[in-house]
Length: 140
Image (cartoon, rainbow, N blue to C red; front, side, top):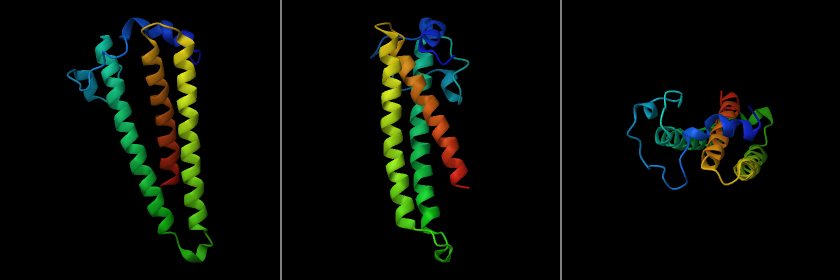
């Protein structure tokens, strides 16, 4: 389901218009890490938003952990700690730019439907999940 048009058709009935997303969750589906049990558009959008916010916090935590791992690395190992941290920071900045552009392109591709915000948010969630998995491998 990588084609945004297919994704849009599959979920369009479940999304709501922009601006109607609640800033808090009052649904049982949001207490879970997945939004599979969400049945109403408001539930789904709220659930995705909450999961996205959790992922943002987890990503920040992992980046701090990686910086600590680099700082604690054995100096005799020949690791250029400054270069590692600089490359990590640049990679993160470039990754952020990439996902913003990628997800906004999917948002634009959907057109003027009410699903476009959901498509963009789902795209961000997928990218964050992948980046978190990658950083977990690094931070071991």
